[in-house]
Image (cartoon, rainbow, N blue to C red; front, top):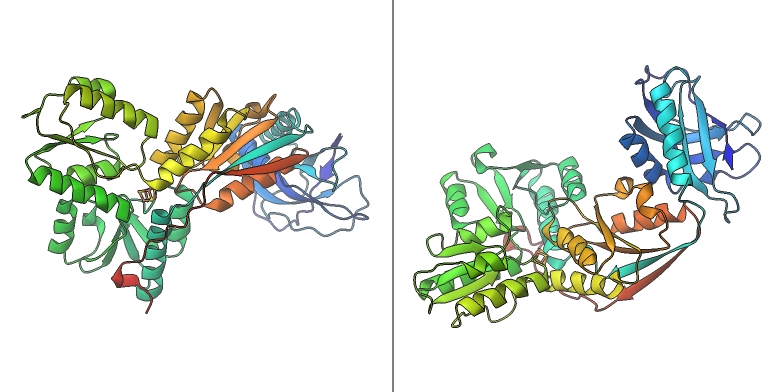
Length: 435
Ligand code: SF4
């Protein structure tokens, strides 16, 4: 069922952009309770992909007698006409969660609104289930790093400078930025004497030296499990070994670890790299791994190294951290049962990307999703079971938001598979530890 809705915008707004589309998060009815629009984020994302600018607000249903007040964005024109899509038979009455509208003189916006609604209507109205992997989302190292920036802001005031993204997630960075954190790529951008936080991924000793030369007040948010790998790198190099670091070139954690023993460490990414590696003394080779690798892929590289260097030595306990391992194991438990896997996480999040790859290796289509608006309607065509997880740097609220949005498409059941409960907590560094 498609109903027509009209906007309740006042006339004092600024001139609209040509292709502004109002995506309703609430439909106001004169003689009935409002309809909430839980899938509004989904429709807004599709409107954006179709070239219009979505804005959020309420719509008054034109089929209802006029008179209800509703808040609407000021930049949607008063004369704009709208389209609302409501899923029939939902109980409680739930809309697809969306109405798009734009003025008749804005055909691009009008088309984007209609097409976005049609695309989502095409996959709405069928029962679905969500298999929720647990553990998921924030790990102890990420929670600690975020809390360090929060405490620094509270205790020292803004700005607090942060070298690189504190953790690899756009939402976390935007939130801290809005509270006074200033993210920089290089220490040169930090004023002399200012406070700077080093990110959870760790830095090389050279960066520590540069900060000392600049007289910066450093708070190190390196995850203790990354620090463990740095310590191993120094120890292995000091006993005369060639240190083989298994990891991804260019990742900040890898750059930091390489800097611990730059003359003695080589980076290896694949079994093929390992098989062709030449070292000074094949009897003296050790390996380390980036903390966020795929467990099975790292094992293949270690096997290739051991085949080439039988005397290979490694860390006493695995470098791939508990959080990476748990999230991969939890997803493994549900991936094959799902028709589609969604992994909440940003594009530069290594452990999130490994989760997507893992699901695909299990034969299930998977996508990395920064937020609900990234989900595309075509992904859900024919999908009844959605596997859902989040990388270690992705806030838990993102998962909740996806579940809410999927409920707007039709009946939804949610089942959680918890393979283990995480209780690890890292203490804050003394500089920001509350007294
Ligand atoms: S993913 Fe692992 S190594 Fe990275 S911050 Fe979290 S606990 Fe630390």
